[in-house]
Length: 231
Image 1 (cartoon, rainbow, N blue to C red):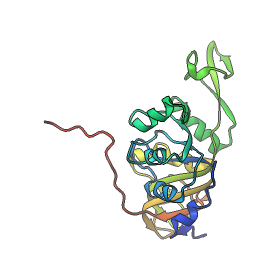
Image 2: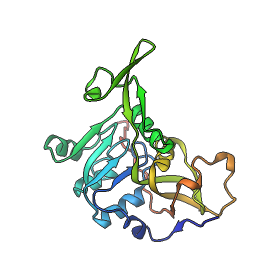
Image 3: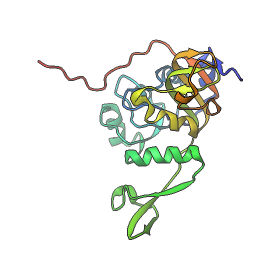
Image 4: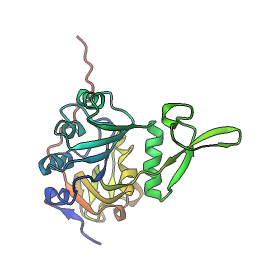
C-alpha cells in the first residue's frame, strides 16, 4: 500500500495558494486541525475561503487566521464565540455565508458523494432562502442547496495508519469524515500514527483512498470553548 506519511507539514501546506477554498474539520474546538492551522499561519497564504462548522475563538483555531487577515470568506453554521469575526463582519471586511448546521453538513456530504444539488426544508421562508430555488414535494416546500467542495480538506483524527485510513473520536467525528471526502487534496493530522494492519477495518471511519497526506501531529492544546466553574 502507498505510504502517505509526511514529516514536513509546511511543505504540504505550501501547495495551498492564495484564493484557495479550504475545508477545516472540527466541532467547536474539538477535533480541529491545530497543526495545519499553525502551518497556514506560517505560510502567510491569504484570500482564503474557509468552510468550517465555526470560526474558532479569538486566540485559537481559525480565529488566529482571521486575526492575520488570511480569510476572505467564511462559510459556517456557528460563529458566536469570536469577537474578531463579529468586528470584521460588521465592518464589511469579511464575506460570510451562514447556514443551518444540517444544511452545511449535507452540502459537504453531497460534495464528497458527487451529488451536485439536493432539496431540504431547512431555511424555507427565511433569509437563507433568498435567491434560491424552491419546489413542492408531497405538499411541502423544499429549498434547493448545492454541494460544497474544496481545493483542500484539512482534517484531524485520533488515530490513522500510514495508508491514510482514519479513526475519529467522539465529537470530532461530526464534520471531519465528510470533509475528508469533499476535498481534492486531503491532509490529515493524527494524534497517533500506526503501521498498516493495526487498525480494525470495522472501526475505520474514513478510508485511505480519500487521504493524500497524513501527518503525526504534536503539541495539541485541546482547549475548552467555554469554561464554566463554580465560585
